[in-house]
Length: 237
Image (cartoon, rainbow, N blue to C red; front, side):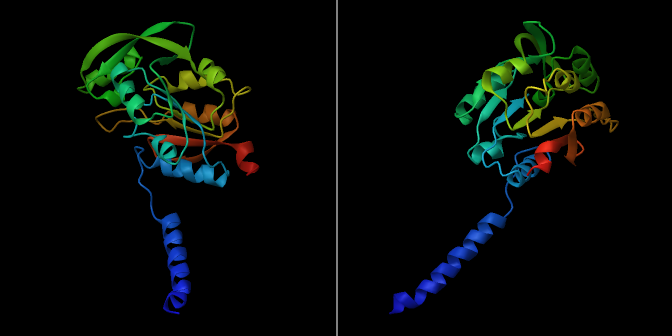
């Protein structure tokens, strides 16, 4: 009799806990909370476990736009040219395909990769590396790294639902090589702010204009990164 009287209370407690679990704030692993916005978008699109292509992945967890998706059961392809950084992915992101390569914009097989004292600023762009060095960054070494094109990666592994792009100074050049007619991810997150140490950073509006020309609209902008959504996918949600 006593146990039966507690049954409605147990049901109520389970409902309250379930509602709290759904509404409680999540931890963000991105630089400025981008992953929480991205997850919200995919929930709205009813894509439970979006696949991804993370270009310039840097770290499997920290400053990652894809780790929250990975934690929630997603998987994808992570491309990172630094051989030391990619090693961490193979231990922490076992469901992901990890590629130790750079993304090229031509047919070159290799390119010089500039490793800086702050690893988030590593780049294939000599001018970008030298610009960072002018702010006090040290170019620790220059190493040859193999290149693949973004369309080669997409052809091999398929269209992802989400692309994160952060390659320090070459983002626009890479996005211009993207074959939107064959591959059309629902969501992009692209770094659209230049790095400086003297507060003279500049928003790269050419990237925003180019994505708009491909019929992606700006869903959110965290100043550092801009999140774009395919207009047709959003209209059809």
